[in-house]
Length: 80
Image (cartoon, rainbow, N blue to C red; front, side, top):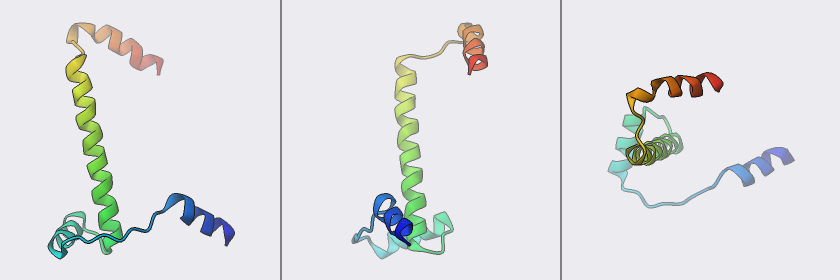
């Protein structure tokens, strides 16, 4: 029982938020979730993933990989 309590304290956060009913309804529908918690969790994870992709795209724009470097890229991939 103590492990469960510690887990909840360390890895979960209870939040009270005022969010429009229509937005919650849409999020639940788009995520096909049965609970508000699950819907919001999925939506937030997706948002974070999209943010990370945008940040990676910014890095690629600054330092693009050109096709003439394909041999170098294969070597890097094979070393992993």
